[in-house]
Image 1: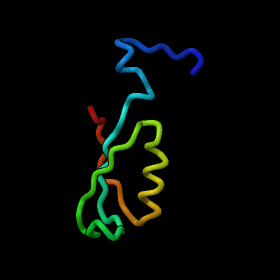
Image 2: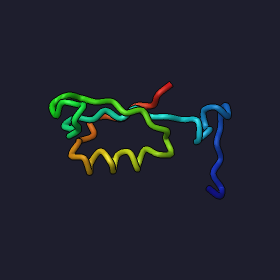
Image 3: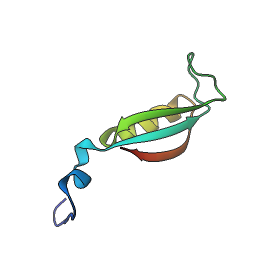
Length: 68
């Protein structure tokens, strides 16, 4: 973004290398029981698309954590 200043090491502010773990419940898939929790690791840049897909499949996002 224009005018945005980042501080710290470049590895912390590198948008493309970050990933997140999305914890899901109630996901309706053949290989996952509907009542179990399910974790999905995705790149940060694809988090929005992954969350939309989870919602479309009937899942509910329980939590989101940054992955190391």
